[in-house]
Length: 341
Image 1 (spheres, one colour):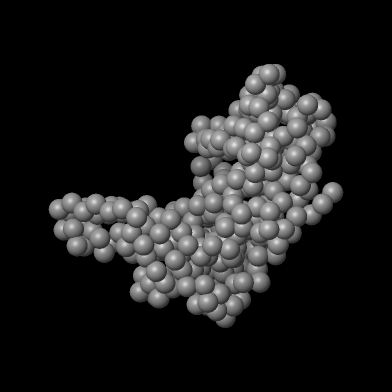
Image 2 (tube, helix red, strand yellow; image 1 turned 90 degrees about the vertical axis):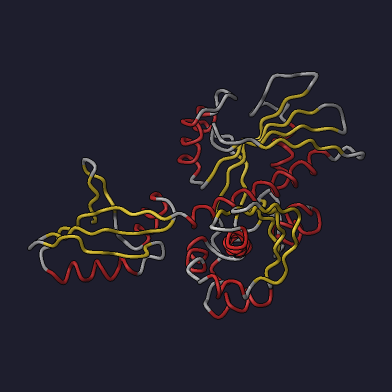
């Protein structure tokens, strides 16, 4: 089975290559303030930050993007090289705009290198692809059958690498077959696929071939989320190759967008830690403060053998749990209470 290198993607798959190396980001932003001038100022700060984080997520890990998100607006603005206004509208107290923002490649790479952020991209996240196929002449959807030419086209590519992600086609195993016994996939099926295949995300890519030169593609992640539709045409009949390239390009940008959105979130929870001796808590507090996602650890109450803390963190709770586990700390839920172990 072939391994597609980044170079091969650059040569053969322009949509994916753009997602890999682009230092530009399209941003849609809006803000409201006391007047239009302040609204525009707030909107531009938000736009600069979103563009900066989007581009950064193409070069480094989610944990490092969180650290970069701690830069002030003034520090972050130095990385903005160019801003193109596609469209804008200003009200008395509002401002909206579609922007294309270019980040200074040399400055960003230099900053990441100085802070040991560029070398950490060695472990890409795994994304599972489930290729479902049908034809206008034979409309039944298939996954495992020999007639699934769409799945075979994906398998022929081997491992596909794009940005911080490795793309795998769902393997033909008894466990996967049992889960994918029906092409109508609900949330439970997606969750089982993630668990079975040890991947970060699953995308079902449904392709319908209409003649030699046309392919209609529908891309879905979890049920209920917005689906993406692509219409692929190619005079040479290479619709499968072109369809795979555009699918990978779209999913890569979608995943990067999720990372930025998740990093922008803030949350907090209260947790209890039980200890026998005070040094045990002091050690735990030190370890908590070294977890990249945790922004602040505050003691609410302390007794002789337990401490109740309030933990402020960025991103989702599931990612917080994963970060804690990497540090050897486990967050457990007991009747609605969180306990650190």
